[in-house]
Length: 118
Length: 118
DNA sequence: TTGAAATATTATAATATGCGCATATATCTA
DNA sequence: TAGATATATGCGCATATTATAATATTTCAA
Image 1 (cartoon, rainbow over the protein chains, first blue to last red):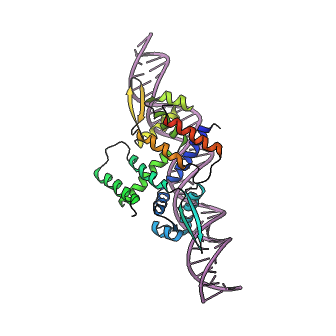
Image 2: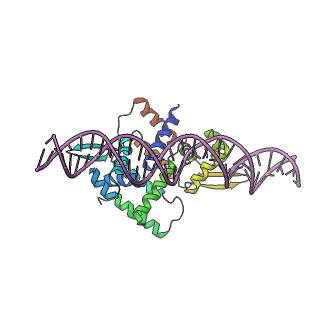
Image 3: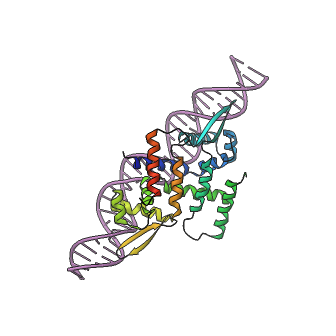
């Protein structure tokens, strides 16, 4: 398979990992540093197994890395710059349309959230 | 539904549209300007109906816009900056690992392709 | 070593997506 | 108007993804 197509496929597969609300939220939580599974689980309001499998998907694509501390597992962004790139991508939500006022403010709110230390 | 979750869902849905090799290729083709359906169809080696439905997905999410010219339909990026953002995202393919030499060069090749006028 | 806490894995039912095929629509040209 | 060209749409099936529930593994602490 030619390089270009290979790349396109790899890239598409990366994007498909990102294209999931809960996985995006996990990345959002990790933008400020390490978190253990239970902490993420509570922040997202998900079950423990669900949280764990979402993390394993992110891990499989090397978006997050783990570190064992006692009986906990701490997760962090493998490449912290990913968070900034994701924030930049928010600009394309709602496409080229003229979005509703409310929607614009929602975008801005989330942008803040991701940018600030919270 | 709170703003934040709404946004996350919207964003995830945008990313899912991007997470498809052929759709990425279409966006790649459009990075330099307008193209009609037949031209895209030939560039991608897809059937006409398939090309058309891929375009309709991109259109539904306002990533591309159309313009009728005679009996042709010309498509273009609604937000041309999307292409640059996608190029930046290539950095995260293969995650934080140390990728094989060959793989790195493939990334670079594609980056060139997207950046240059071809 | 036994129990409890933290995390991971597996099986599975429900749902969504991808894609080929047939067909429809619209526009131009002879 | 008939035919050809360009594009779009609807349907159906195969496959992929999501999410829940049950179960397993690891580690600590008493």
